[in-house]
Length: 252
Ligand code: NAP
Image (tube, rainbow, N blue to C red; front, side, top):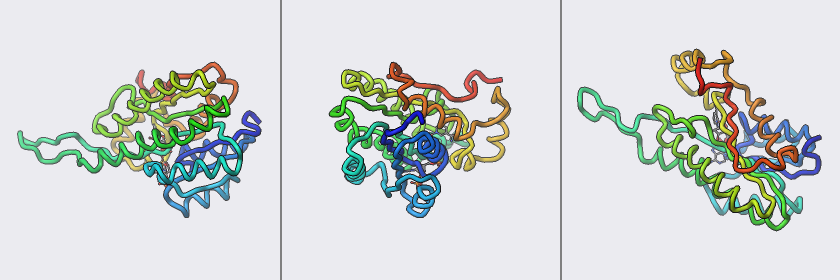
């Protein structure tokens, strides 16, 4: 019961890493509120986990504010925010064949990834922070990625957002520290969720060869990192980005 009595908001808590985190947080005694856009999936997850679902698109500032106000109205506080919602829209910045430009990353795809991953994290944190500052405590965990630290082929927009999230984490750790609000980020490696499963089989086979542990991570293995950073055990950890990648970056 490491989170007994805590109120936790988890964006994108309806699937994958967010859902595994919501399950662990419920098991650890937290009052958990999850959000996502797909209502059917969200309601099913909430029922299964014993938490509360709201239909929220994190890129919509007004909807985010209503969600956060509503949760605080019901519980009287917010202790933990996990900024987990994220999407990918991958492609080469420019694709050239025999010297001719044949394709380029669509501007709409770049904008969409920025609006969800980066702006969504900004929106949720800006809505939650005043409550945490007022109560004099809180833990915010932003979801970056190893590619935000090291870059990746074909992921201009996604990498930009995940690197930006590391930057915002450091700014907010400085800004909120004096109010006893901690801000950290996690940088998962290759985790077995829908994001990974949407990638081409050939790419995944190659990727696995570079995993020192010989396998992809499981969502629960990221959930435990979130639990540590959210809990009082991490009371002196702020401004950090924790790699949880099975040494992927070191390679085999
Ligand atoms: P996932 O299985 O695709 O789940 C994504 C979650 O985010 C879903 O609940 C989805 O629900 C929600 N979501 C997407 N867009 C949203 C929006 N605009 N507003 C609110 N919710 C939204 O993804 P995952 O693999 O668990 O990834 C979770 C986070 O970890 C992401 O930030 C991802 O970038 C990061 N990450 C993942 C990996 C990996 O290998 N899986 C590695 C590094 C980092 P709806 O679709 O219903 O909105």
